[in-house]
Length: 359
Image (cartoon, rainbow, N blue to C red; front, side):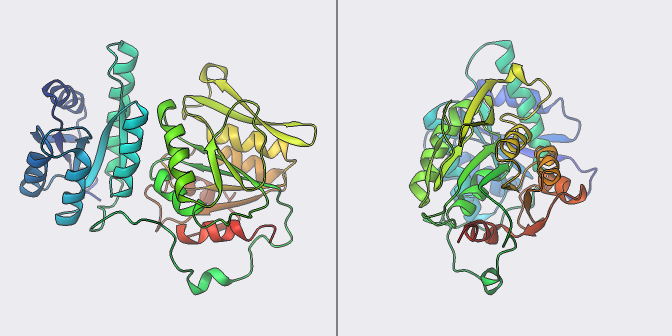
């Protein structure tokens, strides 16, 4: 946390593009609680200035000469852990680099669209200001020497207790997440066994270009089959469907199956977050007649609360991540304070708990 709620967020901008350095500085100058304390033109200079200036937050470009953003991030996390916000291109390669950065300790990312359109520029400005404000709520990361090859750890004694959901009717699982979600979801799904008998649907706030590469990354690191959802996909046991970015995903009952339906954001103007966790959970609950588990992981805001409330009303089961292990406690907090959380668990126990269902 910052020293006081009134303190300014001291930001270091690291980007090899002079245009982007000026653009980011100009955007942040509009935020009264933000102070740009320096800029750097590549990763080597970024590391040097991070150590010299001790900023509260660093915005870090990915592709830079001499030392790229991933290399700079790893050095900073090893020498002087600092909140780092990656500035990533809206491409598949940009997405893959971003997820590597999150594994290495970055707290979040801002996708930048190289388009000259006013809409794209406005979206980047809004996202940057929002993410920088959120960063003030994120604890300074612990020293991060290297990204683990796998997030699976030995079960703690607490995990071997009987299932919280024994004798509850559960035929599918819906999971929602936002800030901190990419790493948290990998942690959860890596602990669910390959023979898990129910389908899992995930809605995580990501842009269109990111959800496909993210699903591929999860599929390579987890035993479950994981892929980006497509229109008409059927929810099946042992398979995880990631709601595509840039659209909203609903689930509908079709015969004996639960089927994916996607729609443009203009069809659901009431939802700020894309894809909407509320829409995914509510529709999955209706399609399964309440026979499901809803899970809310780390994230800013309260997306997912209405979906979990709807699920509780239909007799479903709800689980949320606890505060101590959440990057941002907003989404889980909304469910707990709204009395719609049946069980609250630390991150490293959630996947194991899901895995007990049906076994």
